[in-house]
Each structure stands twice: as C-alpha cells, then as structure tokens.
Length: 250
Image 1 (cartoon, rainbow, N blue to C red):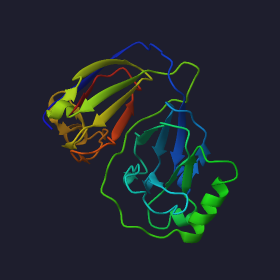
Image 2: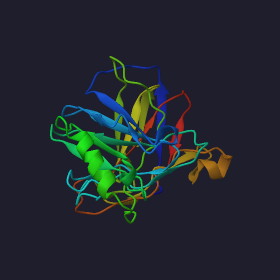
Image 3: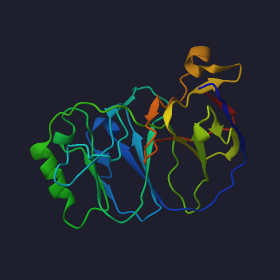
C-alpha cells in the first residue's frame, strides 16, 4: 500500500468513553487468559494483549469450546518474540450483553484450558473450561485476520482518546484520515476495509520501507489483513501513543 499515514503528538487531552478491559494472553508463559472472563456492557472494549509465543483469540460456541464459530471473531495467530518491544493487542467491542466464548487455536492450548468468556452466565465458565479440557484438540490454523500492536495504559477514571483510521477508505489506496494529532496515552485504531492491506511502521526518509529494514529498529507491523468484499466484520489493529516522536506508517 503506497499511501502514507502520519501521526503527530500534542500534550495529553483526556476524554471519557466506555470502559476498557485489558486481558493478557499467555502472560508469563502460561496457557491462559488473565482474567479468564469479564462482565462488560455494550460499547465497552476488551483489549487482548498478546505475550510472547504464538496464540489466538478465537470465538467458539459453549457446546464446542475448541472449534471456531462460523463467522465468529478471530484474531488469527499472533506470534510474539521474547524480546519484542510492542505487545500486539486485538480489540473486541462489546455489542450486547449476550455471552461470548473464546479459545486459543494453537495446538493443545484449548485442551489445556486456555479459554475466555465475555458475560458468562453464573456458574457456566468452569463448565465451559472443563468441556474444553475434555474435548479440546488440535485444529488447523485459520487464515490471518487481524493483530494489533500496542503498549497499553491501565484504565483510569479519565480515558485517553481513541482515533479511528480507515485503511483502504472508499476502496482507495489511502488511509482516512491521512494524518492525525494525538496525545501520549491515546490509542490509534486502524480498521481494515475490503482488499488486503497492512499497517507498517516506517522511517520519514524511507516511507515505503519497514522501519526494521531501514534503521534496524523493530517497528509495529499488522501483517497482511485480507478482507472479503462482503465482510461484515472488519479487523482492527491498534497502537498506543507512548512518546512524543512523530510516527510514519505505510
């Protein structure tokens, strides 16, 4: 994608919005989501923060905890190196109060009890986890859909602003808007529209070359995000602004 996106920074300006829940994926080498479930309201956001190794956040049904739900949410596999500076984040927005069930598709992980839920009914999560352990087995990896990259801030009473950027806006090779001004602590959410694009950090002097290639510094990279023309779910990639340096994206 030849279009460029630039991010400028200003002193922090805080705004309030729905609650945000941070869930670690595979923290400290454990095959677990932490916490294992949350209770959230419509409009709230759940950030899945991927730790080193290679996990997924994959929606399933209660009765089949280790099987991808047809048309369900799926982060795809998100490999994270042990020395990676930016921890990828996969963001899910809660749309209603119904229970939503998830598992990790990595071979053996669901069968080891690596499952998660949003709004599980009382006394059901442990049953869901037990069913996963009893029936979980290896599944073929799905095609990649989305991953995100971010350092993240713990939620406070006043939350940072989230800036939404459309990738491939109106079918064009462009980001919309092409640049923003953001504060430290703000998040930038890139939403991928149909076709197959990336969000790749670059250097001002080499805008179409990945940052690692041009400078040796590991930058954020969404990976390719194929989205079909009739998609109803659009994958997102999120970064958190953590310093006052300008960022370039291609």
